[in-house]
Length: 485
Ligand code: BG6
Image (tube, rainbow, N blue to C red; front, side, top):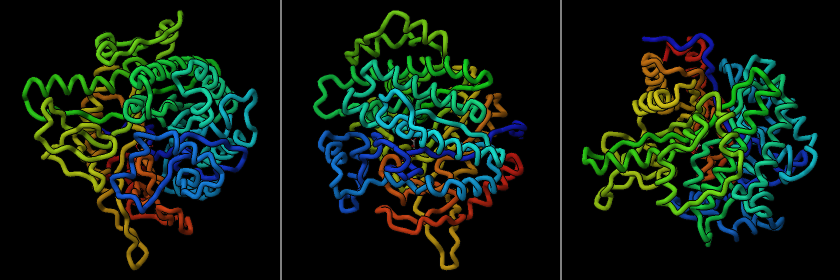
């Protein structure tokens, strides 16, 4: 079996709004994620509703200081106060890299200030120093579902072209500040997910929106330009930097060999690949014209936009991979796949599902890696992969998360196959290396970590950290560079 490259970046990933907490400390402003609530009295199937369809009333209530609701993403797992302890644990596992995001609202609390917030900049200085102390390479997302709320409520989010300047200013500020500390950057987390949840992706509330498809793609266009300009600035400020795009890649498979299923699968897959096509190749793909016609989208662009996209494509492609989904042109009589990120997927009878209905398909990861590498011929980075599960603390205090080990082992085996296939992959960060608040359900009990955090869905608990069985397993995977799984 082909070995992992010698300098392969093994590590773990999180995002600021899911770990940090300290939402009202160090001058931080509210982000779009700080308004998500968790309410255990609601039926389970309602927990993800806000993720897809945030309402004006919910945002207004969250801005009211007297609101009695619980907002889990304001607390995260309290990494803001535990970062030294947590990074020491990552180092003990032998992490070569740690992927996280910089909360835009720590640096520019409202997003439109002239000057950055020094306390926010100082926090990330300390965090990066702590990582570098152990030789852990920071991999930083500039925007991971945490744009300033103010830019959503006062500017209407990314469909407003002014956001390009605000973002580039934020990006340039952090490039200059951390130029000697951070080499790997990602511009927008899961940029293609605007199609599922425009509120958290581009700051647009879908409710009563006159033309939501137009808003989504206009917002995406501005993010493409912002990403290209940030890439340009990053290369100027940090000459040896590498900038990546980041998409959610859910492999789609035709439910049957019916040519209609096959065609629908190609079209559906393109709705994700569209985003990496623009960012990696530097231009809108040929199929855009028809896609926009069918969606009724007419982009407003400016002279020079095409040139910007062409001149500053990304250096590498990163993606999250959790599951695959079957696609049918005639879904009426078929069983739907459940799961938070799946819209309209059909249940694949050959695959098991997680407790949240996400269909587990390790072999799909090998296919995904090959598809992306064949398409772009640029280095790849797996930015997220993992199993959300409920963990049990045994009487002796241990957490026997063999199910997580199995999931990760099977996926890493397929990564190895893909490397053998010739794919150029330079890193793997499993998602939620320490337990964090779920993005889609805002639960704490949907756990991904090697490290357990004593905190429940309502925020109760000591927040003490505890190693799970998978901690030592992953430590050995890294120590043997993937030879022992
Ligand atoms: C990805 C996001 O979509 O999936 C993460 O980039 C998220 O922020 C992860 O946490 C897992 O999803 P969830 O809903 O289980 O937290």
